[in-house]
Amino acid sequence: MPRLSEVIAALDALWPPERAEGWDAVGTVCGDPDAEVRRVLFAVDPVQEIADEAVRLEADLLVTHHPLYLRGTTTVAASHFKGRVVHTLIKHDVALFVAHTNADRADPGVSDALAGALDLRVTGPLVPDPSDPAGRRGLGRICALDRPMTVRELAELAARRLPATAQGVRVAGDPDAEVRTVAVSGGSGDGLFDQVRAAGVDAFLTADLRHHPVSEAREHTPLALLDAAHWATEWPWCELAAAQLDALSDRHGWGLRSYVSRTVTDPWSAHAASVPPLATTYEPGAPN
Image (tube, rainbow, N blue to C red):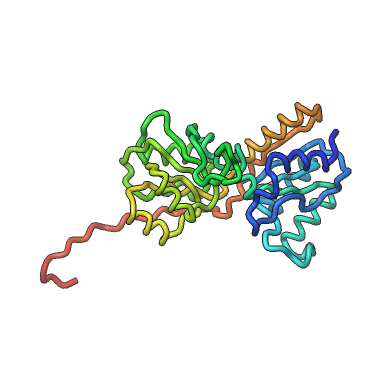
């Protein structure tokens, strides 16, 4: 069996930490470099529910997309929920490793997995990485559809293929408009509207779209916007990452077993649909 340090070196080769944003916190959070690794669990969020799942699985390593301590900390006391996660993992000899924005930019990365979940054909990155001479790395992906579909059909496809959440998939734009090209970005994407417009695509699938950026985007372009849950757009990466580690394990003869958590850690737990308002007719001179 490989040591943790060997597995971490392989993961760093897949998602080099130097390609993460400067504000990000990626890499090893806890773990003994000399410990053996037999089982690895992949998940989006390093929350207590996932830590407990890793313990039940008897995993030696937990790999998550989201950092546990993004803004740093001065304590890992178990009286705080993040400290409790650390205590749980260390107590049961489970290492924690994070691949965040470095996995977003990878080839293949988070947005490739999102496109793959919908059978979209990737034609290139939405925001190319200038350090990549091949032009394959970067944020987001531009995709083509094998056959045209309406915005409504694309939204329904995303709702079927992505993990079920309380939010589902929201749409801004004409639901009957034709879609031939799509930009996708796993996670929060409304900071990429300029690049999406420049790409000239028909639709943009991402998460965490806010009112004002969406309203302004709709004024500038007929671009259709599809807003899915943040967790749901990033979860497909867990399956991709697990497959990548399995391939490395086979190549090195490690005999690792990779698992993907199916636990829904999207924070939204319920959805109440609005009742359509009654149609109102106003007559000139009539009291309101």
